[in-house]
Length: 344
Image (cartoon, rainbow, N blue to C red):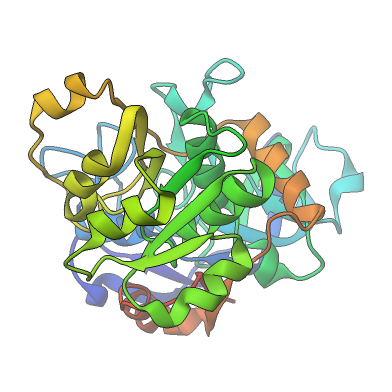
């Protein structure tokens, strides 16, 4: 099969288009012909060494074992079943739940042995991938690229909304609102949970698109008066922040939160380190929440919402697999809207 693998930590030159043996499904696994794979920050930061500590990157302490085929937002067709798997699954179109874990129900994502496809396992930058049959879910939409727009980013967004305990009628600020997670935060918070959403982007040309997704107001982080504009838009402090930016908007977020407000973060594209005046946090009774991935139950809820068209795919652009370098480079450019998809 053709695949793109990461040879080691470094720049785009570490992405190599290669030919490898097609994997064979083991007991409990299936072989999937990959039809589409969404790009996430996860695999870019994995290549750059931005995840993990001590010079290692990945979801496990030992770090990623190279070479590794990245890619976690995977849709495709099951073409072979391993031993112990019902043959009826062969021929089905599926979307992959992206990690294995021995954690109890509702705590799968915080288990010490959580292992991620595309990081601890070879992933979807390939023509074929093997995965446990029990972690293959029916594809929610009729097309592969659209169905690949949700797995990691959608579950991440859904979990953030639940962790922040967003309630109907509350006002939520979403940072990075034009990105993969951010655009889904906008939809899930507004269309499923009934919140009012203030979407923060760089380019206000995206205002109409974000309002179509459910945003009540769209503001630019480039404004010198962003704090005042947020407070004016809501006629006062807001209830919660769903953040994927990190340092660049952290202080502004704390300033506009009401007493008892919640700040939930799942990314740091605008800076991984920040300064916190603890007095702001405790005098305003602010709750800080770290959030990564989500549970199988939340993944099922997400797929149901997608099937019911409460949450819609937003795709900026697709690339053929052999152009993975170009796709990752484009992913990091500003001003995009939605997901970038690779199609083997």
